[in-house]
Length: 279
Image (cartoon, rainbow, N blue to C red):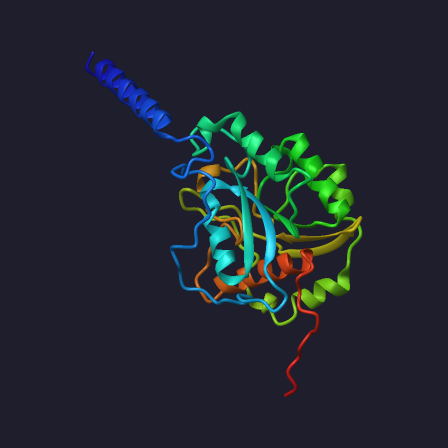
């Protein structure tokens, strides 16, 4: 009887908390609405690889999980960029229970349609470790339409690609790939790691691959850590711009250097010349 009473009280408390939280969330567009904010107020140690950038800021639409959106801020500390966010529920869901946008329902769709509308212009669209099939059909179609028209695409760890997305990746540019990674210590970076045994376990990483391609008028960059597994617990994932496993060492800023270069290249904001020191 005691257990039943405890369970009943816990259910009542949970229901009250959910109801209060629902009532307390201001509507989208309100200055106090906590969703859809991407602030640079909290500064962490970083190497400003391209901030400022001589080629100007990258105007980017970033589609990434809400719990991992700090990575967008970390990237913006290192790369001069203007960010328009679309924060989805998780790596495997557009929206779902337990996330900060649960109560938004169709509002997330409304927001995404507005930001993917023809009147909005971006140099690059960044998809940060979101399973391709988790995006609604109309989002996928809108993204690929923009790429054909000239908007760049940077996709980090793409999973569950359909024929349409595979066609985007088909026309490889190997010379550009070598140039983009020039000076990055890829050979010694921890980019191939076994799955961890601790709880919650972290998926294996690698082998790493950078793939650059052209689709229509748009440039496409894939930074693939091969660590996004839809069957893994989505609550264990904390990063879209770096591998889910974060080894010790001076590698954090190098991961962001790769992402920053890929974003600049896809958005046609890369340096116009390549500088090689003469020793």
